[in-house]
Image (cartoon, rainbow, N blue to C red; front, side, top):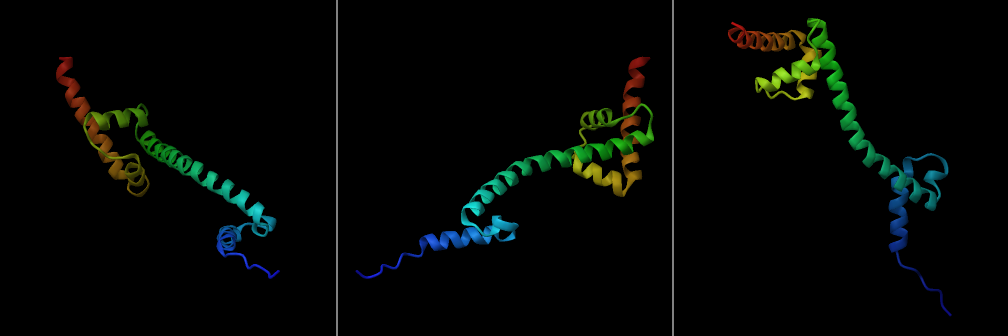
Length: 128
């Protein structure tokens, strides 16, 4: 009985798997089963951490904005600042505000001062 040569599909699948796991360390880059397990684990981690990254960056932006805003006034903080921004319908997202806070602090101070002035101006006729 002559020898039957197998097809190339399984070999192609394993080659693709090995290319994915080529950057892993130890047996995780050499053994096919282990590479397959590590691939699943890596993709799960990547999927989970994409959402986590969005969360972490939002927290970072909020912290940066709050730090700069608190330097200016004792009774002024992030939540009041964002509330006043939305009341004035200034649509600046947190990412842009954080960049302004780091690169051009005076600009953020000007924005907050304008908001405070307008709020004081609006409240003063009602008190009389």
